[in-house]
Image 1 (cartoon, rainbow, N blue to C red):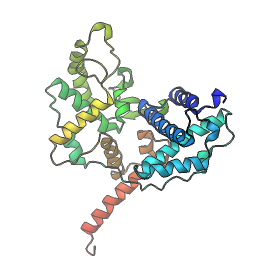
Image 2: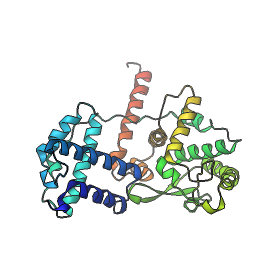
Image 3: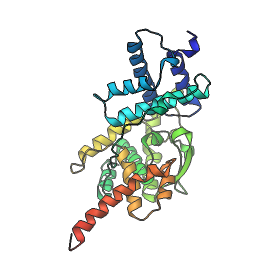
Image 4: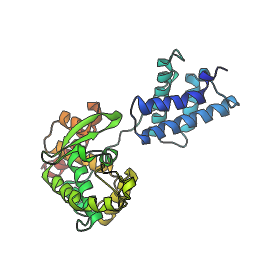
Amino acid sequence: MDTSRRLDRQIPSFIEHLRYARGMSPHTLRNYSSDLAQFEAFLRSVEGRADVAIDDVDRLTIREWMGTLHAGHKKSSVARKLATLRAFFHYLVQDGLIETNPAKLVATPKVERRLPAHLSVDDAIRLIETPDAATDLGCRDRAMIELMYATGIRVSELVSIDLADLDLENRIVRVTGKRRKERMVPFHDHARQALQAYLASARLNFLQNCPASKRDERPVFLNYQGTQISTRSVGRLIEKYIKQCADIHSISPHALRHSFATHLLEAGADLRDIQELLGHARLSTTQIYTHVSMEKMVEVYDRAHPKA
């Protein structure tokens, strides 16, 4: 078999293409790698040999694999894995290794679209005020949560913000989103005050905890050791503060992004402006928030209309 036609040779090449040509995040790359490794393992078990060729894959093979997934996976996971295969075989078509994309002929499982979890305005404010701003860690956490709710940025975007990206005077932050697409997002004065307090004291103290030889002064948000904070750490912090707000149900850091969009829409912001602020490539992605707003409108109607 020509080694260029071996599946195990093309998968790493595809992942590198996503990393450098498409600028995908490490988290997304791990998902793609995991999905393709799982598919390759299935093919090896079916073919009964270690080396599987890309030519061995057809529409029926992919459908058979998806059939094995339905028992232990949600429809959304199966749909994502099929999307991975479509992207992979599209890459092979573009590279001239195959003529047609077999995954395009497979129907996507119908996935029920769930409304994103979000906080009420009062709960969002209560969450922001939970960290003890009198301590260095609390001061940092207050600034992070304040900025997330003020801008709707993703956690991965938050941790990658550098000092050069912040314009405190004009209250604007430059954000690098998916596929390395940059956007400028405004933030309110409460967020600016929280950032100024953090930058003036806590962040400087964190930097002092890091050896000068390893010190990187570019990132805005640092951990106690003076190095760039991770997305996982931010997630743990949000969970901690959520538990301290007893009346708030369990949410993820992403719920702050959903809350930002929902509250803007409820206040009358244009959907296309929200799309720009969130960095969504398609308006259809942003339109999920219209369903959230409609749900609240129905609640208000049922509560207020004399005939309801």
